[in-house]
Image 1 (cartoon, rainbow, N blue to C red):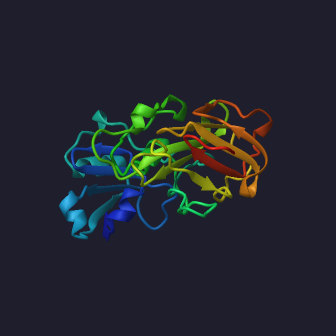
Image 2: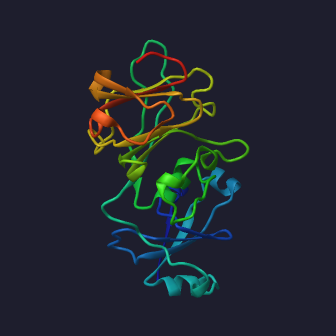
Image 3: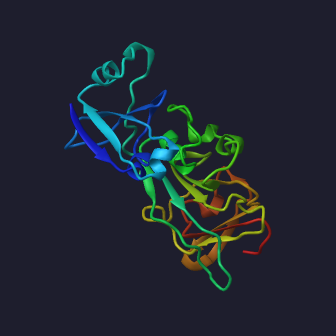
Length: 248
């Protein structure tokens, strides 16, 4: 067993795959320096606001980790790190400002498990079953009750029918596109150019434009709320735009 402290921000973006009360257990993907299973007590809002760090304990087996927290391993499915060929990434995009042609965006943060990506995308407000498939998710599942720190406005998929790797777009604007906000991305995040094979939008983004070239050039496909396939635009998207009422 090893022990170290890490910042909450780092933990919230870790592969969190099992929540038992206030104790988090996860499997690390490709861990080299630390044993593959980790346990930590989730910080309270007050502790996080005060900048306290989460202490993480590492174990060589799932059974050892469960024994440490006093849980029966037979009652829970061991965490898994996921298919290494599939990634589920999250990008934060901000509302387009007057006079601009590109929204401010973050670097993508990627996970091996789709459930973990949604947990991070919703600021920890939504915990989907670890085995859930991206195609099974509905908009209602992505909107937790009460105030939220982030809003999911769209998802791109590397496979048709909402399958394969995923790219989830979130914004700090709780209204999404409902208030007339526009979001524009002139180039796709690393690894996502000419990859999209299906797409969905949410939160009032009735237009979800996919462009053939960077900077909104070439052919364009408006997915509206949903494109199960992309037709001639399959694996062609290099820039995107979301809005409730706007022209390409």
